[in-house]
Length: 417
Image (cartoon, rainbow, N blue to C red; front, side, top):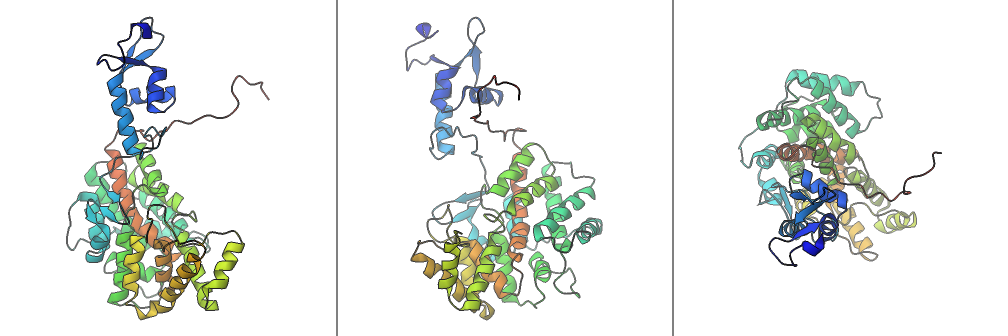
């Protein structure tokens, strides 16, 4: 076949499947997957025993894949997703091009969510849930065992709210946004209240506060919680967000997509990490010194929670923003001092900066919340980001989130066992 091909560099040169796969850094099967997705065109060879591909088209796809995968060879761009939502760049991050820390500092959570969803700031926007949705979620959550964790409750609440919504399968943008504005307050309302006399009134942050602690709230403390929610709305393709996009790619409805995200954040390396940081802070506060606590963690072979982030060589901007607000809260002074002690002590072993999990740990430890409260804050906040990513994915080709497996097992045929 190649004897009759134009010379390299000729505008009409075509590549065999093997040549195209080598240029793209993928398996031959993936080349045909690109064809089925409309990313490459192919032409059958004479005799019908294979296909050829336009060399310029393959080279353009290879360049695009390298850009989208950060230049890593062989990545094939299969796990790279175009998004207009969040950019992380040089120890800062942006929601639709706007500095996320500034946006969260100046606008309540509901307005930050609307910005991420629509690109519009709707001043004074409020989220409310219909009584039927709240009642269904509460009944389901109340039936759980007493030892159930916060993510257990939120997952069950999401499923119950879905069953109560006959329009959940409507995936138009207007319907999905309507679902989001109902689901988030439903999740909060389904949580057991911290005070028996609590009434669901005010901003979402105020309602959530009363679910997390029995302590009264003032405007300064409420601002810290509201800012934390805004800071945590989205963070590009974190593990839970990728799960949401996979579900949305299969056209799961928004409640189911959010449930997929909730199923991922329970891991200690994701949404539950702030609880580990909370417990570490309490140990340091009890002993009055981070030294022996850090020594015990390292002796046990455990990583120190609340430190370092693979996307930020410096300090996590979310932690920096929360620490600045907590500086003005007298109740937070002991936990802040313990956090500084942890960072300073660990720096002698490994110069890692504080991340948002340590900041959340300071918040929850300072305001009389349980260790798992940070996980609740994270999940409620991130629900808005998950909805934004689901909306983007609903606009893409269905079932595109399907990477190819690289089989490394025994080669067939094998004898039957």
